[in-house]
Length: 80
Image 1 (cartoon, rainbow, N blue to C red):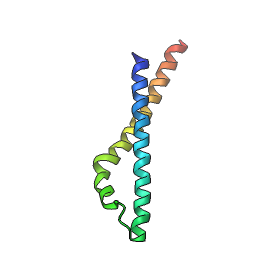
Image 2 (image 1 turned 30 degrees about the horizontal axis):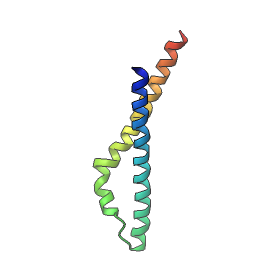
Image 3 (image 1 turned 180 degrees about the vertical axis):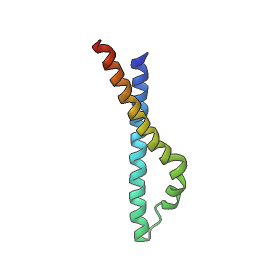
């Protein structure tokens, strides 16, 4: 059961990493486009910051902490 939970958590974290990287890439390209006078969706990115990218970053940080904590607890109980 624990292994299945960790596998699902890791799968979600991997997908979340790619979402966060996509958001960062979009922000970088949109900011460069805005500076060049080309609309690449910077306004849309700003609208999606609160409901999409901000929680994705929080889930990534929380999931990384949870994954590390579960691994640490698992090692502690296996050592005994």
